[in-house]
Amino acid sequence: MRLIFVRHGQSEGNASGVIQGRLDFGLSDLGRRQAEETARWMNQERISRVLSSPLCRAAETARFIAEEHGLPVELEPALLEYDIGAVSGLTGAEIRARHPEVSAAYARGERPRFPGEEGREAFHARVSALLRSLGEQSSDETVVAVAHGGVINAACAIVLGVDIKRPGVFQVANCSLTELTTDRGGRFMLRRHNDVCHLAGLLTTVDRG
Image (cartoon, rainbow, N blue to C red; front, side, top):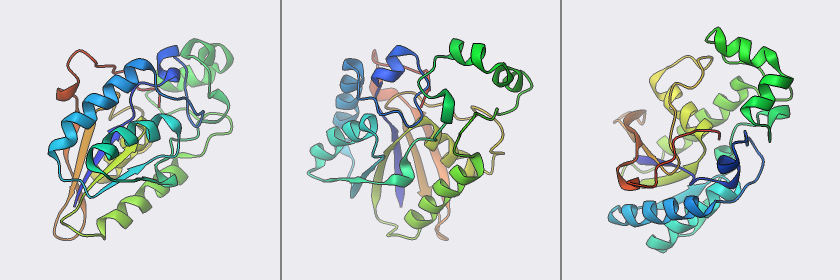
């Protein structure tokens, strides 16, 4: 199986500089252009299914891709972005002012804990379960999964065995492509990461979910 993760196009939340988490922003004008270019680029692929996080920024991106292939968008709750809790909707400056312990954790190279967050162990268990389920399916399929920076980061960490407590190891740009393929035992391997070749002139790299 080929599993191609697509991070959603730039959202209104990305453009305004806030941490989104589960807040449901739609795409910005630039984000829609990124999604259109991604869909056009992926028209060369023989895609079997298009999965998407239920959040608007992902589902809207997925529709551009699915329509090119005459496929429905399958909403998959396991692709939801990490619920980052009380800091959702805040800018980096606001987080530093209200939660100085967050900056202190990053300064130590540690992943901070946010009030009311989902929990990294639960999040990685959710993404791991999805990968196991997809890995058990037909090896001939190419599946597109439109998701979020946190989900793609987690999937890469799981596949490569990276410590989940390390922050920001696999940053991904809006509408970048990250591809996993299965070996004969159904285990995923990372084939490419953060591929943005199709986004010349439209690249936005800040990953705020």
